[in-house]
Length: 151
Image (cartoon, rainbow, N blue to C red; front, side):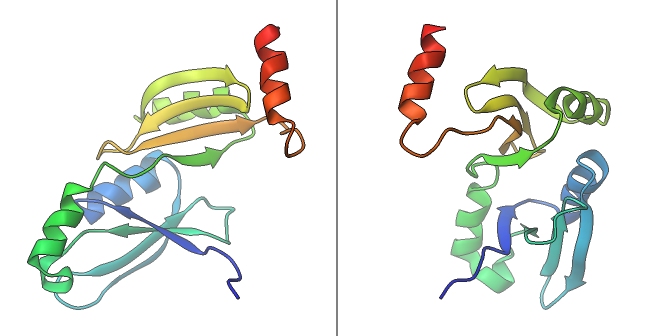
């Protein structure tokens, strides 16, 4: 039986650059950072109050992954799916992160699922900063979207 999701991986080109972005700019804390074999490091970060899930920052290394696979992985840097980070106040967090140099591609905007702003990491991966609105019961989303469209 699967109990829970505990880690997700983001491919990066440089550990120190990634740590500056996730730590200094997003305010995440570094949970682990240790070297193991031939240029590999195990580096994890997470929002300070989140204990259930960590982000693994991974630099593809040929000595560990093999030359061909490391090249394929490097080609995926910046191509990751959009992740959604929850906030209680999208507008305030947008302001704070902007002041710390986070590159936003969309200012806070009201959507059917909440107030959302979009930003990118140094590699081009897109993230959603979301202040969610309560979601309707399963099966009624289509009706709710239709009601919102009608105004």
